[in-house]
Image (cartoon, rainbow, N blue to C red; front, side, top):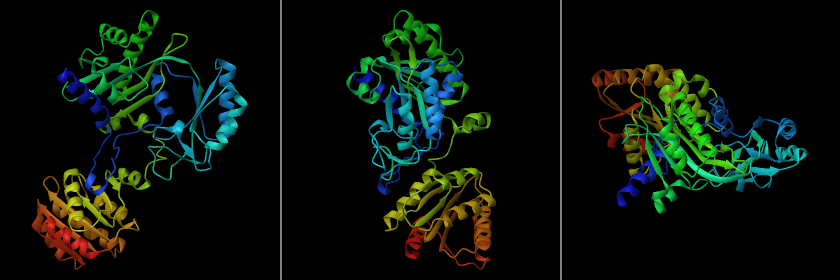
Length: 430
């Protein structure tokens, strides 16, 4: 039993690992989602394109649009409507808007009430337990057909390192924290490995449907939906498709009521249409700008900007800055394929932050040519007329040439022989 509990815990924890870029408790760095994170309406649109059963819905930018969608749904088959604020945060139903209006999710049987609900929600900031303290501006609403859920189950498909391929995780206990289920009732979680070449077989899908309590026509529907969800998983290069709840309505229909889909960044070149669905309304503009130049950027609230190559080196750099009494202003990873142009754009991002009082460059050149970094630094300093203190520590490939370039630039750029010295100089500069 103990080994089964441990196995369940590991699989459930993997559901969240795919979207975490890095975290570092000692400096309060929040987890940064590196992968594409779609709004709920976009995920449901993708599911419907793959034949997955979802509620009928529409997306509105204005109260009048929301009203029209509601009236059309009521004229069709809906007897009740759900109006949902579209932000990338949980707990919307219990959230509060900055105008005092309560709840980011509302039910109504009156299509005429939708416009008033939308007026109170659109253009206002919604604060939930998962948003920043100031809340998130609601710019879109999803108006959808309300369905009565008779039974809630859980289903997820994810890539699992230990299984060396996809795994389906299912439970008859849906609509709740799946980690809690794994902790208290591991026997209520089924994990099914999927052969990457064969895919989900009908027998496997039927086994999963039976385990979560579907029978008769419900099991037939569940089996079909599981196979279609796997088609979606493969078709969009997902690392995770999580449906909670995977529900059964009072009319015996199997429907995916909510979805969380994570995508593989490396597949962007063949999933451009999917990535274009990201509205970027909740993304820090600096992160969006950095991504245009293949840079990884995370804003923090300190005053020493850090430019590095590699996530591990970034966290070590921020650690040592903190150790010497400083506070990092950001995490900027140039990556391995850095060019002079990328360095220039990196400096432009860092200098644009009014809180930045000094820039610390820490590069360990393996794949990276230190001379490329040095040229990029001098070009940026010259082209941007920087007046910020800059401390540079370079080590590795072509480091002697890099030091010569910096030395002969006649620019007030501090150099250091090691990271400790560099951090001390950066802290002293502010």
